[in-house]
Each structure stands twice: as C-alpha cells, then as structure tokens.
Amino acid sequence: MEDASNTLLLIKEFLSYQLFEIGDYGLTVGAVMLAIIVFLATKYFAIAISRFILKPFFKHKHIDVGRSYAITQIVIYIVYLTGVFTAFGLLGIQLSVLWAGAAALLVGVGLGLQQTFNDLFSGVLLLLEGPVEVGNVVEVDGFIGRVVEIGLRTSKICTRDDIMIIVPNSHLINDNIVNWTHHHLPLRFNIEVGVAYGSDVDLVSRVLEKAANEHPDVLERPVPRIMFTNFGNSSLDFRLHFYSQEPWRIEFVKSDLRFTIYRMFAENDIQIPFPQQDVWLRSPVPTEALADNEIENKT
Image (cartoon, rainbow, N blue to C red; front, side):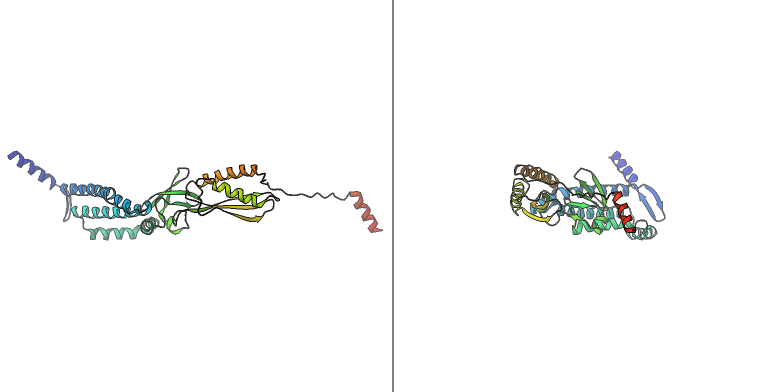
C-alpha cells in the first residue's frame, strides 16, 4: 500500500509539475496531457461521426455525393473547433486574450493575407451554397476535370489525363466556371460534319440518326436531332445533337460516333469534301502590244 501511495504521489507531482510560468499563468504537464487527449478524442470522434452516423444517414436519404461531402466537412470543422477551444481552456488560455492578440496580428498582416482569407471564406461558401460540389465535372481555364476534394483554402480537380490541379477556392466563386453536372443529367452534346454539294440531304439525316441510335451511350430519349446548319463554302453543313449521361467519357463517345459516321458515309456513297478554291489565271498583255499602243496614242 505504501508503494502504491508513493506511486500515486509521484504521478500527482509529475502531472502538477510546471513546465514554465509567465506572471499568473503557469503550464503544467497534466494540462498538456489533457489537451493532447482532447485533440486525439476530437479526431476519433470526428471520424466516428462521419463513418457511423453521417454516412449511413446520407445513404438512407439518398443524398448525392457532393451535398453529403459538404455537410460532412462542415460537421467535422465544427467538431474540431469545439475540440480546439476545449483544449485551450484546459491549457488555461483565455479565448478573449487569444482573439485580441489574433485581431492585432491580423491588422498587421492583413494586406499580405488578404488573398488567403478570401480563399478561406470562399471555401466556406462552396460548402454551404454548393455551386461546385465533389463529383461535379467542371471546366476551368480551358481544362475539364472532376472535383475530388474541396478544402478550406483550395480545391483539387482531376483532369481526364489523371493530372491533379489545385485551384484556389476564390477562383471557383468569383470567376465564370462551367459546371457540366450542377443542374441535371443527361446533357446535350453535338457533332458537326459537312457533306459535298449534290448529296442527298435526307439520306445524310437518316445516316446520322442511325449512327447516334447505334451507340450505347447515346440516349433514345430525348431523341437525337439533326440540323442542317449552313450552306458552306465547300460543303453542306450538318450538326448531330444527342443526349448522354456520360459527360466524363463524352470525348470517347464523340470519337466512336465519328468512326461510325465515316464508315456509314462510305457505305452510302456520301462524300465528305475537303476545302477547295478555284483560281483563275489571266494571261498578261505582251510587252510589244503595250509599246504599240503607246506609239499609237502619241501619234
């Protein structure tokens, strides 16, 4: 019993040992260990909420991936903030003093961190409003990619070539972004093709429609539509409009359709013209004739 009492006394003395003291504030080993325990508990609590509560709830309610990701991130941020404030309280740090110091610091470096805070605030707006969500196919600065992660400051977009692009959140909020999958699926796409003058336009329309209907990724409803768009310089121009639920693979779908159209045009003797231009050459007037004309004019 005496050994156990001595052990408990040593542990108590160890936990109450002050690492440093500044004025009325002192930091003990026990406070640091409690703060570490709170941090770890917060981490695993956030994981448990995400995995065992939110994930089954989203699955049961059939909530889409983008919206469920946004809600999960907001809940995790709230849990972590609560854990951080609790840890600060255990360490004896007054939040009012911390906020006052942070405000003074932000005033000093506000200009330098202006863009960073803009990105942070934009990240919160992305999670709350959802103009761009995880899983959306977006077009940013000329490249097309799928949003795989929305962080507080930046978002990750994976292109069709599996290249990860880091985009500041303010760019997704303030600039014009084409979000292919934000509104609804399916989406409408088109392929343009020209045929030679003199071709049977009704046959061309039937061939294009048949090519679209034969592709498994082209929807039967809404039906594909053929438009006679223009009388071009060298061709009669057509546009095939079709609907698909595969925006991520749409370039491969278009490639398959072009292969099929070219083959079916060849089978039906429909010519795809190449640009042509007629050049008329005019013979110059002989030099001797010019000289004779000048002599006649003088006389």
